[in-house]
Amino acid sequence: MPGPGTQRLRTTTPITPSGRRTTAPRGVTDVLCEACDQLGWKTPTKIQVEAIPVALQGRDIIGLAETGSGKTGAFALPILQALLETPQRLFALVLTPTRELAFQISEQFEALGSSIGVHSAVIVGGIDTMSQSLALAKKPHVIIATPGRLVDHLENTKGFNLRALKYLVMDEADRILNMDFETEVDKILKVIPRDRKTFLFSATMTKKVQKLQRAALKNPVKCAVSSKYQTVEKLQQYYIFIPSKFKDTYLVYILSELAGNSFMIFCSTCNNTQRTALLLRNLGFTAIPLHGQMSQNKRLGSLNKFKAKARSILLATDVASRGLDIPHVDVVINFDIPTHSKDYIHRVGRTARAGRSGKSITFVTQYDVELFQRIEHLIGKKLPAFPMQEEEVMMMTERVAEAQRFARMELREQGEKKRSRHDDDDTEEAIGVRNKVAGGKKKKRKAF
Image (cartoon, rainbow, N blue to C red; front, side, top):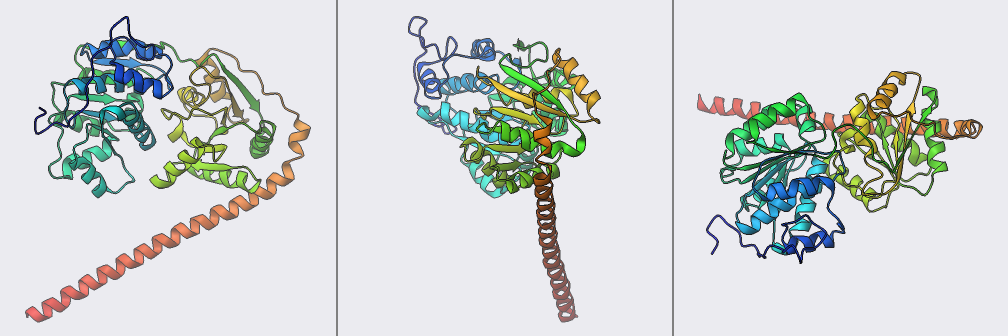
């Protein structure tokens, strides 16, 4: 019988070598193999083949694999199998750098563990802390969290602790550390049991990741499926060299030429993401933005509309460049060239996933030549120019210029609405302060 700190899970027997399915590596139980079947996972990925048998032996793992390599399955399956063997609440913690990735990992845990009754909770910023506290009070099996919000709950949510934790996963560890979460990660490591299993997954082995490995893992097994930066074979990569002032026009031309495909367009700032989305909408394209200045509900809404194919163009900052599993992206456009060459790998990794083909097109202006040369050096190949008819592109300049004017006006209006809302909030706050002060004065008069 489960003890008071456990939650009943349906169990199963390990699969035998002769009867083993092909959808998961050796040693994975039949019920989890069936879950893989239902998710359409036909064969295990390289990182899953490398990491899962080692994880099932109870070893700590440092997994190095590029984005889109099936890392979630590589840590979720061993955790779920261990949970079947020793059912317990607050069993595993997964730390991720972004909110969207946290929700996606939660979906995969719920899908893989649906037949055995697994419950997970997502603890990220941008969402009401009270509802999260209630979710934590129910003691889910798996918590998927961003470091900042988890520390907030550890310090302020009464009755919540991770003293019984058995598994810690740090996914996209290089990015967690690049986003200056070292202090939060350090606080988390101090309050969780030392006697635990730890999986650290990263696309790159940076000095910070090496330092974290030494601090958090015990005698880990290294599972590396990609020793150098590279893009997948079925990805057709192109560039276009254009004057900066005609970027919008060339973008509209490419979207028209490749109509019928789904696109992810990467911009360097939230403002440019919003502006370009408005520009494309004014020209009749079904474009939707995704960036850090949007509320969490709007961000998830944009992502879900694009995943459901209700919108064919997703404009995003690098918040969407890593980890997110959006299976139907046909074309990635680097509208603004990435400042860090490694981000190019992650961006173009949004297409040509799971053996499919895809295209990427990088816009190179007179200001971007050096950055582009660094990218070519990193991936070890010279990219061909995307074939275009410049006369046809220039025929669109007038229409695009008009759409630019409308986009600027709409952006200004949106900014004014935001400012007005802030002013209203400030006024209400000031009135509240005045009332408190007045109330205090009245009380003082009565007291004397």
